[in-house]
Length: 123
Image (cartoon, rainbow, N blue to C red):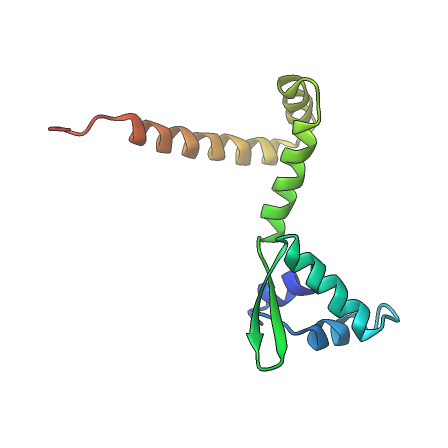
């Protein structure tokens, strides 16, 4: 996933299994078939999107790195017995800069929700 996210961040677009194998060659000694199998499994589980390019597949992440991490956080939150307590504990552990980011996100959500609930004239 890191190889594909880094490629997207650099504007490289979708990658073949060969591209991923080459990118990993310096870090690990992996067989190309192993890389192909992992990419195929990630696509079947919905983590990657793929499209045919001749005889090869081109893969890209189905979600951004941030989107994926957010899903992991929501999954962890779902596993707690008390979501409110877990959220409160989490918020107490963030920095002031992160508090500002959270406040801005909450303000944006509130604004969107207010716009949705307003009754349009004549409607």
